[in-house]
Image 1: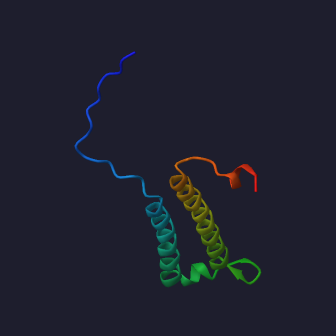
Image 2 (image 1 turned 90 degrees about the vertical axis):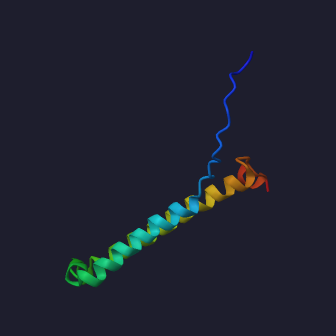
Image 3 (image 1 turned 120 degrees about the horizontal axis):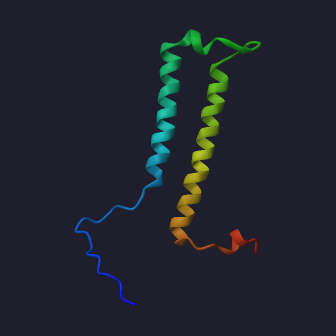
Length: 94
């Protein structure tokens, strides 16, 4: 069986950089949070539960986003380092 020849592109495609998406997502979340704190202090201080303002749940949501994207970045970095192969640690054999 023969395969048709596909000419190589003269432009080399860059490998996907997961660190870029990590920085963009977390940087944008930080910028929005900072913008709200600086310009809408009354909104961020509005009570949600008792004395707790909107700022605290927003900060916790930002922390969850940071941890989630860090875990995705770490998993993607491991996959690119091992070439998609599973290691003995992932299989449960210690």
